[in-house]
Length: 357
Image (cartoon, rainbow, N blue to C red):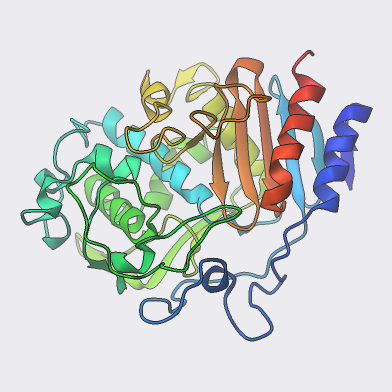
């Protein structure tokens, strides 16, 4: 089923339906390779799939304008893997930790409030919360059976060259180098778990997803190796994506509600759920990558699309997942399983269809 309020929006929907990802529905290629291993040219140690994997659905999406649904397509209730969109949800949880006083200073070393070996020592002991959120921490180590070396030299997006991925790189000081590294994001998720003292899915559900009216169908999974003991309770540390399985399993409708919540600066029904000014911080370009904030992608820098608002930003996940938000125009678009090469045209069509309305 599809719905579009105008012919121009119908053209946007038609584009999405005609350009779904080429990832196999099973999430495994005919030779048995997991989509993530193939996508990032991954082999050797640390590549084992240790989290749940779910066969994918078909293309789906939702478009909201001024909080109203103006288009949708596909099964918008189906809970599918969403890969690195989970990182932007982690960013929001960090905002809640700031609001609760669990993180009192983003520029304080994580190890000051998170005990244990992961944020200790001459190098990792100097890494701050800001470094972790900006993906320039240069964190070194192993957590839940994955060594950060697996994502050294990693590139993402169309045209990425991962021929050197997994080769050991000499790291610089914390804050000196941007690298898209899922092991380091998993270390951030662990650090947030330590500060909240309860599983992050519980925090997300109680503090954000239930208040904004999301369904009960979504779930956030970790690895078989990421269970820990906390206050006499066995809990799972979640992941920032589905790189080795796991991550956030969620439907397009729930993504759209979350996107509208973010578009409203972390407010819902008059309540300021995120700290005032948090999203402004989270959307500030980092010193090491001008198109990146606190685990959000920005339309800034040399690669910005001049046909889209400079203030637009997005959560993105491999396989063709996007929550695109244009707050000044009050537009939220969720795309599932849209081929990444087709996304720029989709967004330009969408903005042209709604910008003057």
